[in-house]
Image 1 (tube, rainbow, N blue to C red):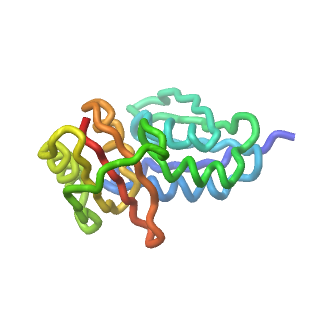
Image 2 (cartoon, rainbow, N blue to C red):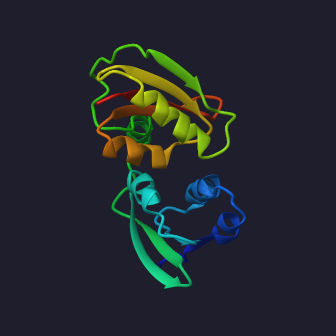
Length: 174
């Protein structure tokens, strides 16, 4: 028996200037085993494809009119082992955790800033580093858009959620 989609419409949140990531992740946590998530958004949420892809979901997106998008996130195969999933979520970037990194030369606390200031301030800090130096930043949430920008600029990073719910990222300038 196929389960019905778990529907999440984040268009009202987005239209009010809000951040729907926590609502989406709460919906993902509420899914029954094998259940798909149907997301309605005001744009094609490409960064979310990576996030949910790492959790075992495959996206199928289509524009439904007026700039709105419907994305079905379908579970693929078996869900990863919880220990492996926790280890995978603790590393975001392009190099293995076994590699030793230098201590950060800059520590930024961007937790109390409004978007896009945490990303802007972090990127400015990274650009002020010499190649190979690192920066650590505390952020109010997982910086999905920052990761894309770091990758496009050739920088490496690692990140994880802190016990208090904030996200700590370590960035090494490329």
